[in-house]
Image (spheres, rainbow over the protein chains, first blue to last red):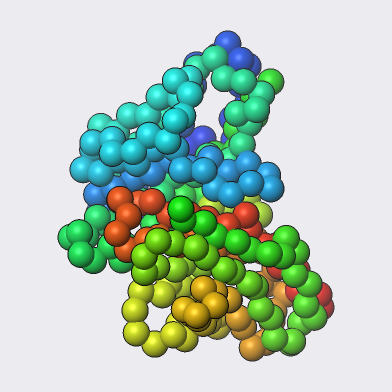
Length: 117
Length: 115
């Protein structure tokens, strides 16, 4: 569990606040992900970074803004969120292998439980 | 389109009995298949994966899963359940030709093992 860490573990914020979620991976991986986990729904992939470059953005509202300053750190900046954004936000990392061998396993952090009032 | 179905929201089993958590998938090509487990207030933990080769995959904590291409299934199994196995289990699939990191998850199955 210490391979991927996330802070804070819990966050309560108002709709007008600005906050950031932090993720750090200690596995030497070169790809990082943000997922949203809501009750009774499949995990939703939000963003993918490979080699610090955003390679996927799944139609996420602009009130969520990711940042990947290096291959070990990933941030999710939050502003003017809505109550429906309350969820568990999970960070994951993996090693991006050559194209022909996409066998990489994603390893997850413990998540940040976000509540928007 | 890629998708994963976990047909049971809840599975209940007595300790010591065998358990099965079902998963079926749909991908356009050949799949990579994964099982993850999530304990309360924790992130997802990797259990096992099928890449190629033997259809029976063995993973952590005594779990195993059987890949069945004709039935497009990847059911998770354990011969003898423990109370500590109680958790939320997720099946995930990736098309081998997909872009980086594009895992498709099922909705999850809550496993409860009774003492």
